[in-house]
Length: 296
Image (cartoon, rainbow, N blue to C red):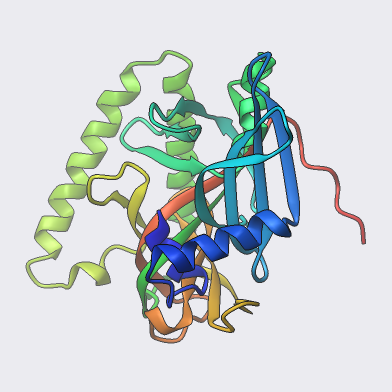
C-alpha cells in the first residue's frame, strides 16, 4: 500500500531508493516498538514512527537471534480518533505476509479493514487470548476526495434516521445471535430503498439523495468508496516533507472514521456538517481490553 504514502504527506516519493531511506529512518528512530513471540524461535517486531499528528509509517518484521531487525513490509497509517466501540470482529490472517484483516459482518455489508497493530494481534493469537468481541477504532487513508454540500434535513428527519439506525444495529445483533429471519427483513428493506432511489434518480442527482454509504471499490477488499458527514476537522504537517494533511472525522453508516488526505488532493473546504466523498483504504486498531481512562 505504498501508493497511500501520499495521503500522509509523502507525495514526492517515487523511487525504491527514496522509500528505502524512509524505512531506514523508521528503523533508526522508532517512536514505538511492539514485540510479540509467535513461535519458540521467532519474534515479530513492529516499529512505528510518527511524521505528524497521528500519521506515520509502520514497519513489520522479525528479530533474528543476533538482535537484528529484518523488515518484511511497511505501511502508512493514520491513528483512529476517540470514537472507539465494541463489536464482534472476525480476524483473518493474510496468507502471504504477517498481516491481519478485521471483518465486521453487518449482514448486508461486510466491512473489512487492515489491522494496524499487527504485533499486538499476533501476540494475542499466539497466547490464545484473542476474543470475539474487541474494542475497535476505524481510520482511513484517501488519495483523492471531494467535499459536498450538506443535505437539508428537518429535526424530524434526523430523529427518524437515528431510530432507523438503532433498529438496524439491533437486527444485526439478532442475526449474530442466530435469528435468520433478519436476512429476509433486511432484503425487503433494501428492495424498498432501491426502488425509491431508482424513482428519485430520474429527476435528482444521486449525491443529493445519499448522505452516507460505504461501498467496496476495486479488487482490494479493504478499499471503499466512502460518503459521510464531516463531524470534525483538523490539519497537521508532515514533519519531514512539510506537506499539509487534513484529518477528517467522518460519520459513515454506524461508524465515525478518521480519514487522512493530503490537502492538495481534497477539492472543496472541509467544514463540519458538509459531506466527504473519497476512495479510502480502511484501517483499524483493535484491543482485547478497554482503553485506559484519559486524564485531564
